[in-house]
Image (cartoon, rainbow, N blue to C red):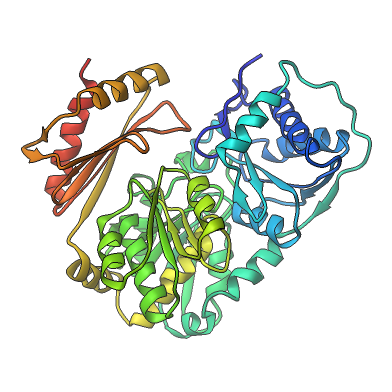
Length: 463
């Protein structure tokens, strides 16, 4: 059978091709065996998203783990990934399994592992799981009825307590939320409605095909949100991804706000408005705006490879205020060492209310103080792993001294291949979850970003 490998966050594959019941059961057995070597019977929570057959895959994985002598609790309904992580943390479970492919296309599903206190399993753990995955589907018979529980109310109550909902509800804003037919449902709308602020949700119902969109909250996927915001003349729009751990934002004019600006806005809000303190952890694709803010305020700054498991690992060791990644994942001090799209959106809304600024005004203020910086990303599709490795090896062996007329001042190979310029940077990196080669860039103007990405495409396509 197939050799199963965990990527940046979990094992993901196409449904019915590689993501099958036998392979899910093999993976569950590998996890169960890994846990059993430390404890004979572990407490394991299992959750699932809105994807095709996610509930059935979750039940099958739960049966395998239960048959191995573990104590398993299965979610009674779909729920966000951070809700499962919070349950693992709050109830001191030994591990959690989330059946989800997060932001991937509808034909994908995945198997995420969470460890105490709700953090993504590190590579050191998943590599052991991989080694323990049997070559064939285990022949195990369920020995008990699976216990079920609804963790959603506890999760919603928890995040509601972490924001000033009264101020948000009294602000009189008009907010549109795009749940992208994922686990976000109408939770955001229900939390902020009830007084002067009005909210509407688009794509809040379950659709295993996500309405024909990829459930990733980036500009190219948010047509319904743009349309709804403009027609209703709303003040701000938010979008959560398929499993609810990422956030995207749209301004009052219906323009997508890149996630780096959201990071800067959140850091300003937490540090200045709330007076919270702690370090910041960002990935190699993070904005230089954060570097400037950290330098001005004396904030300890850590940089990691891409993947929230790396950010989470730092958060377990250090007092961290904010953990951020380019794909829209944000972790907040006092909540989880893991990303949470819904909480991040609520805090961004709280920031706008506190600052008494529109999205455009708030971002403009931050750009003036700590920028200007603009960013972009291109995904080169259908690039097999062998080809990706060949491109990276070539670049590392013979790094260019100039790119598009810009002098390279430093080269970083922590994750992929990153070129740093006096004002900006360029990153070439494999996706880690799909056969994609991702190209990232940041520069003082959008024109320079596009020029850098064009240069990166040429570099990546050279033989």
